Length: 338
Ligand code: MRU
Image: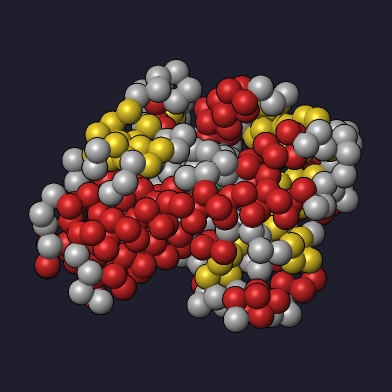
């Protein structure tokens, strides 16, 4: 594989490393990926996370495995394991199916490496495409609220929603960013705040429960969020809490936009009810890291994502178009894909 570098993934001299996102913002620790099993564990632990990045990382891990001399059944088994490391973000399946097609066509290590490089490079371009589309609808003096982390840590490029926010700020249209902390795993507090700080973008952190008040106070002009899977009718899954934010934004008349690359659109999924939602361990709700604040015996509900119906979407910002919410339910995505 050629050398690749993004905020949280690096290939150098054929060796793959990832920035361990569970240790941010305090430690910027890079981890050498030992093989596909290791990558599966890193994805499950959210050391590598964000819908596009897990696809990119899994493709790079598979290519590196092939380059180490592994082939045949072992490679196919590794692909199958990687493909099911997390169930909701369709970018993972999309990337693995691309690698699978190369394998099925008889491609070897060089072809797999070329495909992994293409997945990486395309994601960088898709991010810029989304940001360019978003710029077309931003006004001036915008104050944007976002949820979870959808930036350079979640993609190979500048990000989805956070990439659009970054370009919007650079263009002088966005003046402030509000970042939801994002319970339970704090991707907003740990990761988005870290990225915004590094970029010098003025921001304010809030707990998820403060968003409704912020919206009522009129301090937010627009909500931009990422997506892990967009169904054919525009319903979409994103980090749990997104649905509540969409309801609140609608109630307060604030425009609400998911921002996603085409690799996140799943036309085979008719609507939100068909999107598989990852259930995670209750310990993530009862505490964080070494800290515990709830009785170990208390059952906890921990869906990693929720589904926002397209009826709550003002418009969906893709890399190739901005689709008005009312057109999503009328087959607009299928037409774009055709
Ligand atoms: O569980 P995570 O941290 O992988 O969830 C990430 C999100 O929900 C993002 O908003 C999503 O992947 C889309 S943005 C790249």
